[in-house]
Length: 320
Image (tube, rainbow, N blue to C red):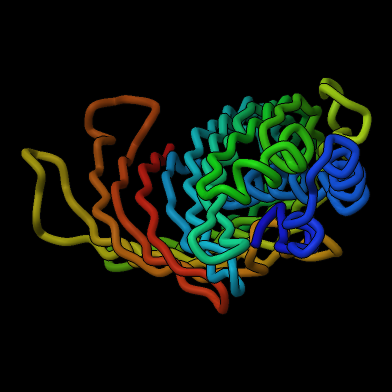
């Protein structure tokens, strides 16, 4: 389970006999010692790594949880952009980029029969990045990148059942659940792309190794402060097949989409899964005849599968 495990719900035998404010306070102190908010930070940092190409996307992940935990549903929306300067230069070309990301995670806990805690985590933020696009031959490009950004995290919980409302709520409120924080996000990435094109087939390959660190700076209490980091390796492989069809006067192509994201390091399971694969199809419209800076528009969908996760995503991308 991302961010929170059943161990944070404390021994249920202790909760059942908590009859005084002192006993509730003792449970709160135990929760503080058990709680690891760095997982929350790592979970936010992880969504920045979800794709290596500048695709506008929304994805839904259904993770598999353990006993006593409601299977989490994670929704991620990303709005990235990139602007390359001096594109006609033979040497390194500076670029700036950015990303707005929003994440919503719904899950729940079943501490006892007829008892449940429903929890929702919301995270959103933006990053600004800069680096160089370095051509290597005619087909390869390298992308060393630095990034800096801001994130906001918010959690709310609903308690059902007399034990949850009477004992779990006062023991966990403001510690495990029902708190918010702001955080600084910074990182480094090294990416590579390959592009091969013939009249009958185009091949696009992209990969990146990214490291992001997140550190809180505005929390209600010191114990809620956190630091977290996530390293991820991403790879995408797309096959573009032109067709004889047109959308109006614009040629259409069919695109096969393949990809993999693997999280690395101590926090690789911060989202409840360590890796996932993607496969799907898209339609691409060639609008180069309009003289725009954007030459192609692509709309598609992908399925997501992994050892502990499944889901789907929609993408909208553009090419220059």
